[in-house]
Image (tube, rainbow, N blue to C red):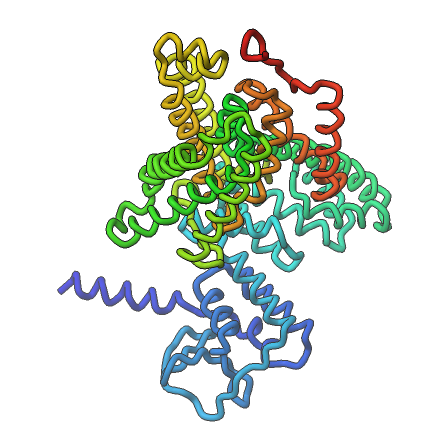
Length: 524
């Protein structure tokens, strides 16, 4: 009996403690003064409690109504919730929806986004703080400062400090603007640049102008470093893509001397093989979909290697030593392969989705995002280069390949089947092109014309690096990738390509053998 009485008393006190929202804060919402309504939204949001969230959500969803005497209710079906008293009852007479214009809706969105900073879910608070770094208003400052006082997370708290300072840059108080500008000296947020520039030139307070100038200089320096590191990373990423697309050509053209204009279509076949593996996993093994690349890599290598072997045995074997005929024949083969793919898969691009573990990226230096798929391609390119080097230098096949390419007649005289080695070498180069196609499928959509965009770049990499030189191919691919990424911001994508092409033409005129010249009998 005593226990029941105790529970009843506790419930009574809990009900009495729930007083709802002060009617004085709610009153301006039913008025005609737009400034007062926006200020009321900010004041209600500053409460940072469940009642405030419920009311603002109702206002956003057009579920907030008012009676003729100005009393507000949140309507849910046939029930009406009174935000002032916290009571729920039947619908009152004469309810009319509140008029919500774009300005008021924007104020509600700002308040709701700031209220997420009070969520018990750390991920939600982190996402809210990250979003506020991109866009924050002075009206959100009280909520942000309240959240900052309650935040103990080592990652979120510094972000909130910078967000609060960003909001206070718009304060009418000069001392607050100056303190905010000084606090942002360690920020890497590029969105601050226009606001700091305005303060530097137009603010009436000299102290604010000086602080803004110092912070802007520090920000520009930090952004320049971030941009340099970003260009360096994405240059390596582009170089890795070029390396994967050119590595197979370095074998078929560099070692065998075959001008294979169908090399781009071998990349395309590797990409479509990846697409088929994804479809197979999606249909028969949906739980293991994130691991379709484990099947796509060997499948793409084997399929393109088989296509390469078929080409070498049926067409190319008759054209050794006849470069012009080889060029024309492989160009015709490339057209046949493209049309075959259009017939089978259609002319439209198909999507190859990244596995979950390759989606997203890691943020460094505050704002630079290094994509996981780019990181994976860089690592993959290193593994493929290492594998090719081991095959050519540490295996029996590699010994025979080097022997045949250096002196075919002598290799044949000591019992090496030169025709078989030709077939296997061309198959190896084609299989590596298939691996390049797998990598390309992770960067964009796959279509019949996929390889056409890389064939010229692949030849440039092989020629610049030195025909037949694996190390030269690696250096040339990475060098062209970096040059392209650093030239694009200055000259644009098209002019950057033209400048690189002109450089290669001039370089080859001065040094026809490329970066690394072949030595010994293979150079004869």
